Length: 385
Image (cartoon, rainbow, N blue to C red; front, side):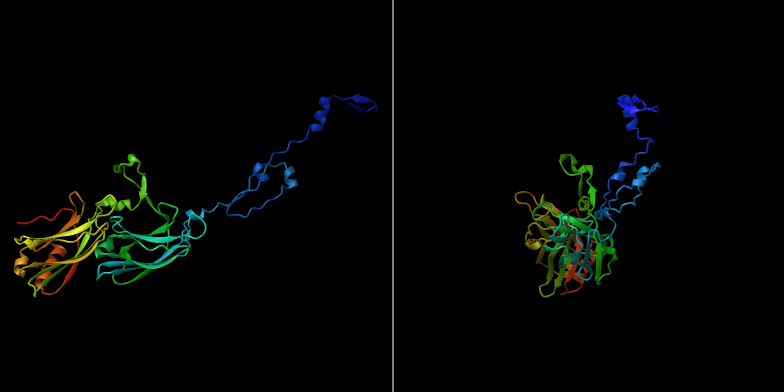
């Protein structure tokens, strides 16, 4: 290659020198961050694309990356109470009848995993306590994210002592026909000590994520069982009570004897593998030489809250009955094998507390029916001398 020199003559230039002259860019400019050439996409900001500034491209100073505001947490993890929706319900502690009424009104703003309508129901549990024994649920309302139930769930045998130490858990479930198990959409918990007896109280509380607890190693986790279970496991592990029974006592002056009514049981301990029991009640008046000293009710299948409403009669004067003891025991019926003992209670003049009060009151007054709930003992009632 040739070029004109200063004297007008032609001067040959090698290819290497030509490439060095044409390719040399001059002063080296700093390379900008590659993030400046690509837009940033954030779920909470509108994507805005800016063309690179030609003057900024030629500036010799090094530019830093743009400063972004911290992104808020996703809606599902937000502390905002409306993230999972709200549940409206009313609680009433009827102290006169020893019942707790929970009326589920409606839910608002539910957030199911999938888009579209959802089929939902509400499940209630008393904690601590046997999970299935205190488990109640509403009907399923289909095709809406704002379901209205207007359904009352009733717990029988709920006493003032229960109100001071128990908590009501309400959980909204998605009743999906495609899943084997219902999916929880959110839950809430209400300490029942806040309730005033015989006064209804309305709530509108935000739902929270379902809590999970770690299973203890003593439950054979190595046999393929999940390490995490729903928190109702805490009730099964506590074993804090065997249940309770509602008895009515009345001394009949016309018939000359004691009428014992077995009305119902509540929150019985599950004895079968399916998580339920087949309960029945045995009665024994001790000591007694007659054949009519032992009775038993009919069997109620697959329930932990059986209702019997059966009455039995023991003949005798008040003075004679005052020297005896009424042994009441609840059993789980098993076909072909021995029945399982669930719990029992003894009413006599040697008892204490509510048991003694119930026994003395029925014998001191004629023709007056007295109903009272009694906690079941885990040990069978012992026969005295």
